Length: 188
Image 1: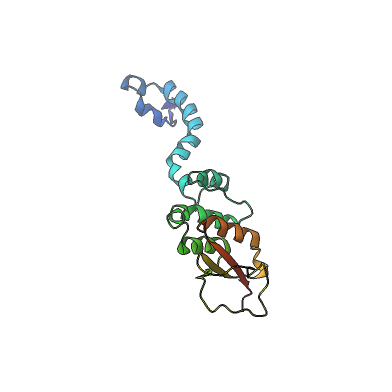
Image 2: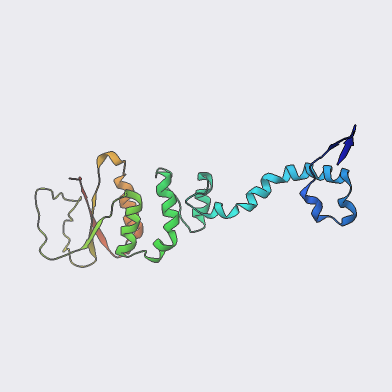
């Protein structure tokens, strides 16, 4: 505290004084001097105080999301909307748990497309109709028995879903010994 012309001027004291021995706490110069360092360190202290927020993929800054994804061995596709990338990182541990299963594939595709796919294994009695196209939703020379499944997705042309990305998701999440057919349906 400084007294000038019978008026008391109160200067702020550094909160760092509490960490010094009592001998130095009463020294006004040291209190003012420490304010300089306190001001410099404040942004760092705020970051450390909120450090846990950086590890939550739902709210971490976008610039840190890829780094956070690398912790769970994910490489994020930057063409995905940020909300979907955040959700993918949030679900990463659960997706690894279910990798290679119908549930895991379904959840991964739901995160990317926003729609729950229908996944069915080959069933006897398959029929061919006017929508059947060789190489797209049928395979020449395939007996269709075992280790084959069909992924059916309802996608609108306007939602910007890349079919190649859907295929790469299926390829990365399916069991290695299986083959699949991807069917895209229009809503309605």
